[in-house]
Amino acid sequence: MLGQDYAAWSRFHLQSQCPCSTRQNRLLAYRDRDDSRNAVYPFRPFARSIHASSSRLVKKRQSPPSSIPRLRPKQKREGHLTTSDSLNPDRPGRFADRYILRGIKANQQVRINVTSPDFDPFIQLVNRQTGDVILKNDDNGNNTNSRLSFVVQPGITYQLRVSSYAHQETGQYTLSMRALTPSIQDFSFDYGHGLIDVAAAIEAAKNFGDPAPTLSSASSTTNDEERIEPDADQWNLDQINARAAWDQGIRGKGVVIAVVDSGVSPHHPDTSPNLWRNLDEIPDNGIDDDGNGFVDDVQGWDFIQDDNNPRDAHIHGTHVAGIAAAPDNDLGVTGVAPDASIMSVRVLDAFGGGTSRGVAQGIRYAVRNGADVINLSLGAPPGERPSRALRKALRFAYKNGVVVTIAAGNERADFGTHQAGEPAFWAATRNLAIAVGAVNRNGRVANFSNPTGNRAVNSFVVAPGVNINSLAALWLRNAFGPDNVDLIEPLALSGTSMATPHVAGLAALLLSANPNLTVDQVIQIIVNTANPDNLRAV
Image (cartoon, rainbow, N blue to C red):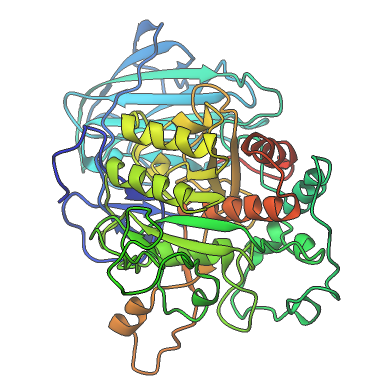
């Protein structure tokens, strides 16, 4: 679907779940915790196998009914599904082997991998005390690998079921398990340093350098003193304590957030008031007035069509922009930083696809044209090293004082991935950006949200990312809605794409509170004030 002229690591995809069309071109459906299939997106299958670097081979024995085999870290087992095995109680017509997991400790990250030359494995992680299925994975049938990654919770005895994806499949398989311990205290492989806390972060920002004067709501020029609560359920704002900043008059004014995405709807009444304008460019005169290399880029740039109309041909970018910085009015929703400006930079096409080259160009455009924060709710599967152009663009943003927030990715439920996607993992391990995972309204990590990785990622936090109400591009409503549809009605989407703009909005609030903060200080504040309390692992 995309050009073939770039490096092997060239395809990007959206990190969200949204209503779309049929399954085609190897589309995969991301699922939320209720397993409702909300979206399909183009994706390159994750086919990397995870193997223990040091293991011993143990032949599976036929155990008496009262005895269940044990599986321990750094151990491999050769198994065989046969017609004499018991049936899987949750999957009719499938045989199943069971294993009890031993030798694992609370807060360790455990990775389980199953491969088979004979059938497509389907594995389930079960709470042995309750019988509840905690996680499951079949790799969507694209290969004969199946893998799970989870963080050990105290007081639970874990059992693994090895079964098949299709009915009555039998054959040999190899099962292995690894367990990793965090290298940083109070760091979780599931949620990193914790849930962002706007109130705590704003207080911390005041201790750096020369903060901006704090306004009371009564003296603010906004409508804070008579704040209109949006019609949509915006539990996400309360979960991160966003209103505490607004009550101090800290709302992101003067800060530019670049949404490097599928574009932003320029005519949506709940985005247009905050859209960034290039005041050095004269509209429609066919001249590059500001000499930045882009003609008539009054509202940003479209790197897909290579023109000056970065409108949203999808719905993703508009939804992301609304979470970060929709204005506080009587329409739709309110963003985390409701007075910040939104710079629209389009790097993803109408199907949600893009290239590393296009994303790199979008980052450089945003930096050179005054962005203070860049939001990247996009990425590629874990392990696909970012291209040289993208790595250089991320370093360019960092060196020029621009904060970058990147979605950790949604591959966990479908592929059992054990680390954040790219470029989030690469950038966060180098403190060039903040990687962001997703939690639901109850503080549980979303089952699709990628974990942190082999080692404690320096800057990994989580934010609300399940059923988040925000804006929809007008074209979607006009195309699929009835004639009398309310164009302002919010749309609920899930994904690390939705979590990431919460952090971008927080970064904008911090820079509004204290414009003298450096990138390192913004990252440090967000990470240090993130709250791990009351969060629950997958």
